Amino acid sequence: MKFLLTICVGILSIASNVAFAAEYMDKTPFQLSRAFSPGVITQGGKTVWVAGQTATRDFDGKDISNNFEAQVKQVFGQIDQVLKDAGGSVDNVVQMTVFIKESRYGDRFVEMRKDVFKNGNYPGSALITVTNFARPGIEIEIQAIGVIGDNCSQEKRCSVKK
Image 1: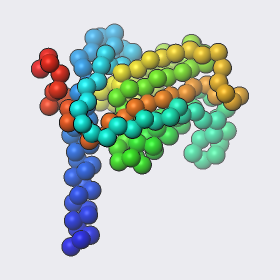
Image 2 (image 1 turned 30 degrees about the horizontal axis):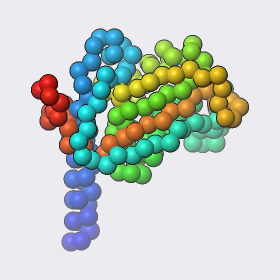
Image 3 (image 1 turned 135 degrees about the vertical axis):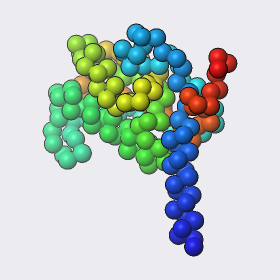
Image 4 (image 1 turned 30 degrees about the vertical axis):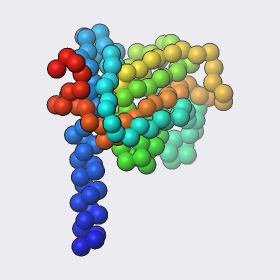
């Protein structure tokens, strides 16, 4: 009986994370094309501040130094893992600051971010070009903020404009 209760609580917890993910404010066509929201409203929930994530090796240990696309995938995977450890997923990201070494990768990053946030609920975001990173071979670093179990959503708006 105790086992069944634990499973039911776990399912309810997962369902609440899916149903109440945050309210992503209405986006202009430009904001949609660049895969970011002008603002994300949260109320309640658990806030997770994800440290800047970088990678020169993937989860299998393969060297991905100087490989922008492989590093983007790996870094989003690491963010997802941190948020899963907190009871959520990358879908709970409401804000991110992205640092890239080469501005020529900006458009490619936007396209890859669209693949991560397939539902169109893009986090508020900044995309910044830097001259270098702390370790050789790093092409990207992402800091993120996730909110898990939030009370706001597209269905249950918290914004003044309803």
